[in-house]
Image (cartoon, rainbow, N blue to C red; front, side, top):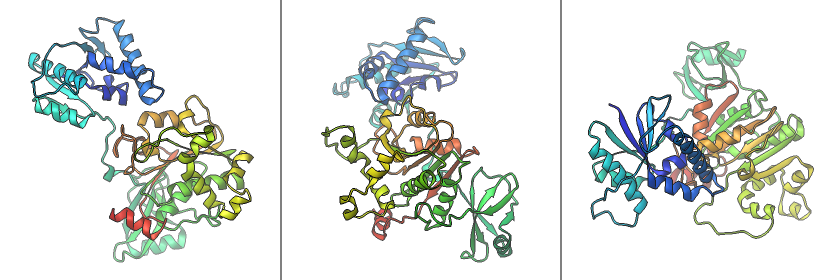
Length: 437
């Protein structure tokens, strides 16, 4: 059966190309949604850009026919129309949400007048879905990239083998695979079938169908050495110049950001592979925002970027006394070795020959992550770090954020690698708090 999808405003603000995601079905946009989009068009945020994008798309479609009657989309297999209705909802629906009520009324009108079609209201608003269901409407969330966070690709395959195979692996540094179907740059945790304590760490060579020894970082990365198997795997890909995109996912205290910055400093200052270490992060407050901050751009950014500064100063081995003598991250900034900036200003840039770290990437939308990665120039390596369970952006969740989106999209690419870190190394207290609270 051909269906009618009625889209809420938040769907178009989330993805301005959402109108093309419903294949050969009909898409309806209530006129009040167009009015709401108009209030966002001057916004300088991602929401404003998306509002302007969908407005331009609707204007182009308008030139191809009467948009109130339906204009062909998706190569003529579906239609898009803007709907106006005078339908009134039951008196129980208060006027506190006039725009929402008009969207619900549009969907209800189509539901009752088009019995030959299944009408579905699509919204990312939980309460709107509840209210729509109360009216007898079919309601759905919109997310083309939703995935189960518990089933997220970890970057590591646990393989049970006989004890003699592990002994052979330690002797020769390689082991033939019986099953060649693994992802590029995937690691192996070899486990003795008869003795769980008898294990080995390896890296899967899919072309040769072998498990090979992991490249151990003998001298560490800027003095930092891995403390667990996931960190060993992360260090391997961080120091591998052939891998240009890395995603590190893990809970608080697993060392994601610290290892990424340490590898960047090692590659920039010691090995000279990259010209600069560029670190950035989205700006989202934890809890209630404290309002405007005084000072110039650098002073305004200090509270947001302080976690980055803390990691850099820890790596430099600085104490408060050292900071009083002027030894701090400012030295690296003044030398041009380190650059720290918010993602707000990244659009339009081209970033060649740099080691780039994007921290707290779970707060980014898939579209924002695409914008960032498409800034990467020749010779640049980019690392995205974050924890999908710690999200401050109200427009994404644990399953549809940009970090998880990139993990799923790039896991089969040779140029990319992913590691999920599970063991906290910040402190015993931090690890206990993460597990208990």
